[in-house]
Image: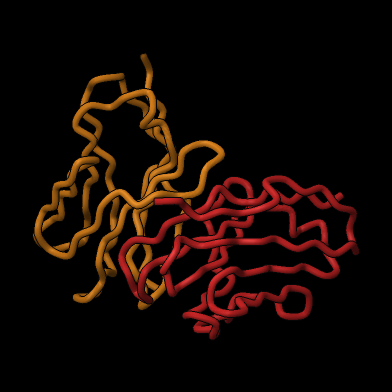
Length: 108
Length: 114
């Protein structure tokens, strides 16, 4: 299974941008990069996904390196509600294989 | 649109007892997943259903865990007998089609085995 590497934790200030990195050096050509997040005491929720090009949606932006060996999830203005564990996942066939994720804390 | 419903939200049992969890997916979603999330780890897939058929149960400990999805809608996950290491949050998720990029998760059932 293709694996991802993320920092265990990151800290951000409220209303500032946050860049969450993910390394996936063994990514294959057909692997999509997915991001999910899990707020405290809740199930994970989908954030964004992409294959090669950068992607934007109402929640976040996804910047994918040209060689696809790394990607960055960008939250443009962090709020207290964005405090969560963020998972970077390479979709393996039909499954989502979650790693440890990055625990993001947001300071007011 | 109603989300994925799970019950109970919390359950405490003694080891060697049995327990069952229930999941009602989003209406119309053909694919249903059960995950186990041990404290401090990411969720791990236990079983995936497509309608009422099993697509993947390779990580389900079949000596003690069982799951069914009768009529292709609701699903039940059972553990019998429970062990201490089964203490975890059990998450149910659904998606409209198999391989869909977006899975919708329920709030989970927190199981404590004493």
